[in-house]
Image 1 (cartoon, rainbow, N blue to C red):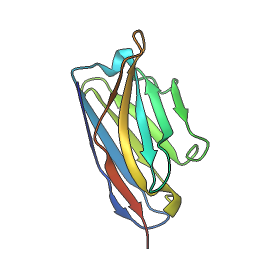
Image 2: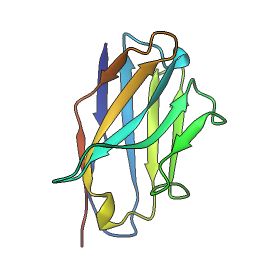
Image 3: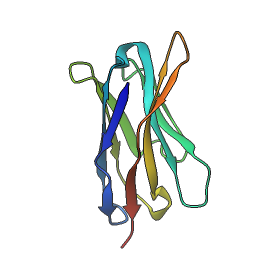
Length: 118
């Protein structure tokens, strides 16, 4: 199983970025797939997740709710994190994560760096 994240970069405060995670070897339909992030000197924290591809089964950290949206594409077996109104506090390495619903087995991808700075 491989989780390939992309889309990180440098953005100014108030700006937007879209992260992508393409998963191979494990269907997003039978999983909870999402994002965690780790800022310098801090523990990794949950950001958002989607179960299957239904937008009705999404979860968000309170720190990003209302600014971030998450979606899934069954055909591409990918998920996307749309990040808006970014602040310097959103600066972190973002990791794609997947948990199989039935077995609980978890997979992690390599991170993509998001830097919010003027």
